[in-house]
Length: 414
Image (cartoon, rainbow, N blue to C red):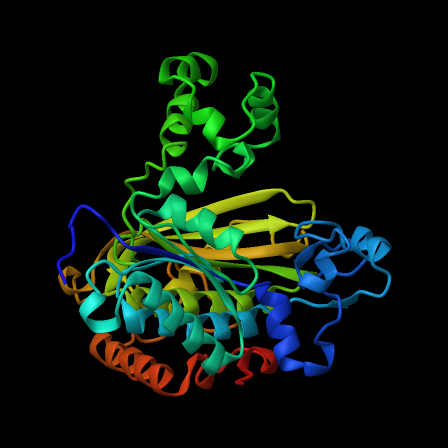
């Protein structure tokens, strides 16, 4: 089969009500009931809601108290991020069986470029069907898919097919697909922009497409130029794999504020382990480690350190996070979110083998009562250990081996 190299085949895959679906998977008695995942009613917000709960107007980021008023019979469950991360890793492993060109957008969402996979797996639509079937069979979860010539169209297509749907936009069918849709479906069109467009008689994407570039640019500036292209289904952005990403990171929001530094250290260990695993899977290392802290009052700070040599080692990233944590008010102020990311990425093959930041305390400060004089870890032994851990996870699943210092609930396997 000859493939036009100018036409790409892009999938957007989005797990349906992911957190809530995992909870129902683990507790089948909840099936068909309004499940709300999030914080408590006193100060929490909704992280996810089952489709049964959404019928009552419940959506993510809504205060949990509001959600309970809308749906008194709703079942509120705490966020179990380690469990969701474990399931996400399993599902993304399915994606990578079909193509290495996977761009994670979040824990439950990704773009895939399957251009040229026809001989192995069939058309892009067939690939999407096979992926959805594999995810359902191997995890019990459903994923909605959009298939299109670019990322923008694939994203809209998957949204329209939710839940558990598959929507295809064939090459040449962009305008037929876009024109009838409300203009609010376009990226970057929020309530303010939508009202401004409606004031000019523009209600559908087709209406917008009939507006001139000059008029849109004069009214909305550079954003108008962007809207002009989106209304025509133009989006040239490539799928960026982890190897091509500018940074790799994870963050968790907690059901209850963290007040104890010991708990924060355990959370940082989990985050560093997940980030390092993604770095090694992508064949990349990074030099700059950034810590993100959001306090109970939603004030957010970031701290960063740049290493002398790039790393993909979880222990090194963890120790950076510990030192950076000392430069925040964490502990003195309750913390609702922690995150770690690594940037300034380079291919692992070109990175220097020697990691100079081997001491337990990077800046001469001891941690958790450990002495500053701990001997450096042999870099070669460390790399062998990391590779062994990765092989075990690939064979038996991500939850089978985790850092021993993590609390029991973070060590749960299936």
